[in-house]
Length: 244
Length: 244
DNA sequence: CAGCTTAAAAGTGAATTCACTTTATGGTCC
DNA sequence: GGACCATAAAGTGAATTCACTTTTAAGCTG
Image (tube, rainbow over all chains, first blue to last red; front, top):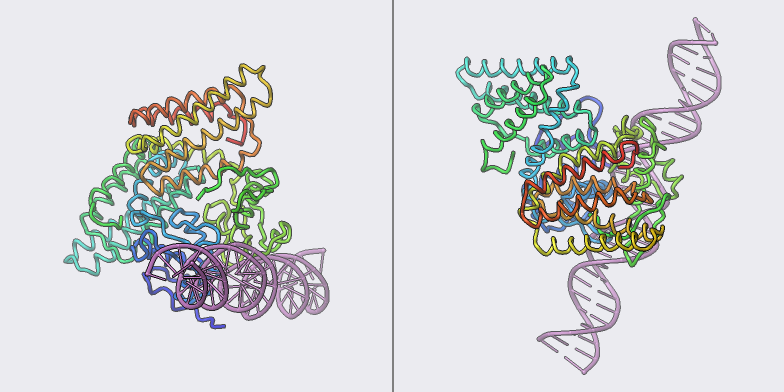
């Protein structure tokens, strides 16, 4: 039928297809629904009808059904057989509560990763950290322009993401790693254009540096503590917003 | 999410339709595949072709594709677009590693639940505990017959399940609750005919009693510690088996 | 007009179909 | 014989279709 797939990346404009692989329709639908749930466009108790959503989004029912199944597996949506899927009560706070989950997982993961992350990986992360530092310098030197701030923000987020995911990857426990990945995939939904303030980014870079040093020194205790502090800081610095 | 507590699939996953609601085909296929992966029938790196599996299981490709998607969301299987799904390397240890994840989640969940679990729920769990105790007595009084042992085992498992899930349910954090549920859904796959020894069950009942008392007294510290001990015991008591 | 019945509409689970991509096979050339 | 390439077979993502269930709304009875 119609095979033009290029009009998608508008919602949050984050994913640009790298050459070969565009995400599957299921992924896109899943992302869209998740975003709308987190934004309370679909509040708790709302009914998600696959037929209606399919019409609305402009795809067939098949990928919608699969996306709903994934939301159900996540626990965000409940659906009993032959009934419509409904958004779970309390799903609005999902991101907030995910942060608490991270507080249980990531410190331990950091401790575990400190014992086994390869040096090459630490080195890679350190170069990323240096890049962030450089961007920060550029911003401060170059009359604090909005342009430089954005660049700094991008580098900061890239480093953030890479560090936390590297820790997950090298913690040596697959389900824990997957759980952390999932937390970040939720976080990512809200990333869109969330520009951080310079204060937050400075603080974040400091936290991350401490953490990275601990990893390099194979110091599990410190790594765990640093991660805990980092996560606590993040939630303390913005107690108001849903987007953590 | 988990709705019917009564159905335990046998080795082949044959499920008799109790009452009115049979699980969807997707669920059945998912369970079957998961079991076969955990049993290393599909070792790490094995290719899972939806067409072939569909033929083999005797359903259409649709539910198989959905089951594979769920396995992918779990992180047990990896599949890039237009390629076959492959079992993730290291998936054999999934259950073992899930136990480590529980060790991160459940103690905190117990502490949280101690502050907010309703008394009625505690009461319900206590009656279940009493039933287990009664079964134990029957077993010891009545010349330790295999029959009584099985009954005791069933009661023990029911209580185990109810207690841990109640804690998850009342911890006040949806994603954490869901994560624990997921751990148990994996554990459940291996439950089949895993008869426990009387020693393990006695120890388990003791652990659970301590935990339940802590919940009743709203004592988070003790609840957390008791849960930690309980989980440590469980892994210590059977360091050999895959089935935790 | 409330309450029950029931037919139409909408929705769901699962099979089938279709366009396209990857993998396997067989033959040619060096 | 082994590298290379065309072509067939198998596999995949997604749309469509079909049988069945739930919801909705109208119609009927008292």
